Image (cartoon, rainbow, N blue to C red; front, side, top):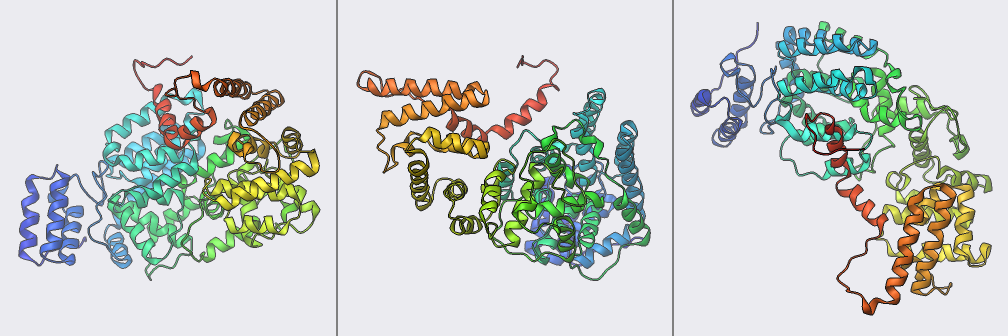
Length: 587
């Protein structure tokens, strides 16, 4: 029998009774809860909130329920339940939770077997059982995202969109927009992560989104707030997040889940992930696609392990120190345990890429897994990756076989690499990473970068900048690409031992673009060379030209687009196919 919750304070009871005519207005409900909290006590507000979530009288309220027919209008952050109270709620609602979890298990099995119609039918059954929840949303988003790579089943993506409309997924726009960008291969991952972390969102939505990026709580307080954030969406989600913490061996208060519920959760966890969903993904990025989507299926052990291993390294550095749980330490050691030095990371090309779920494989890893391995070793050895000349050669090669190193790695470790090596190329690459990570705000690093480059240029290539870049291209095309973007006419003209005048700097830059365009076959560089030579002519006749005209450097415009609007554009292009009469025609 379910427990009946009561409110002892008469004013709180009267405020709650007054809501019977405003159940469709979530602002009024939230205002009433805040009034109870302010005029009476936190306890009364918590009792009122629980009644709103459980009582049949308030079944149609649009703000918050333990079990939902539609997405709540807002994830209210008014009062906080402790872990024991939430475990008690789980036991009180054991029967309803069990019914919903049986259907969630069916959806997971359908996804594993690629039974798409059956999976969607099961999603509709979950909705009919008041199971609208984050887990329903996650499973449907996984299906939708993967089905876009399987043309013969694209029709189901429209069905999923119709279901989303039915459950009013737009009620919490922040979560929907954020998740779509996190899992979108065309959107810049770190740009999205940064925007979410700095977003000004005044409810629990931000906490939900942060869990998609990194599911490991910082500490007990962070865990409790995350648990309450999931509870504010549905009791099912609170149960699943609590179980996630237990699977990760995160310290939680004493308390066990009902045996029947725990049995279903264990069965879901043991299901193997079907990696054939990624067969049509570009081979060199299939593991990053899986990583971005892993939280959607986090109830499966395969996804939890992969996400846990790589989220520790393929994430923006966090200024807050946290101690890893025994689970995290265990799976990271299992995955990267064979790595002893920089030579054990892939530094040569490979033809076959796979998603390595259990252990890092130097033969089949792509850029993503190789990058995590690099950051793992960097942290393990406190930046002391380079011990001999062979390590220096490997480090240079790795710059073309890893990604986002400047964003991921702690600057102090890159500084250690620079200081430990006498190799000018290694020093130059380290300084490039440092200036990139500081976004050009480190004047000392910028000064040292110019100093090392000109020394290398003079000692090995008689002051010829083009020949210096040609030598870098032979060992690391990725670094050459970075040099080409960074070494603008301002950088070149400031080389204080190489006598370069402003127009001569532009001429050198045009020469660099022409060479790189011919070398790579990318015509855009030849176009940039042409534009640079136009700039030279403009400089020669500047007194005869209207200075109000603006000449934009294409690379800078592209970077601005990437930083500011690229992710939104990617989402809009995804929506073009859904328009009945699209106004925008793409050739």
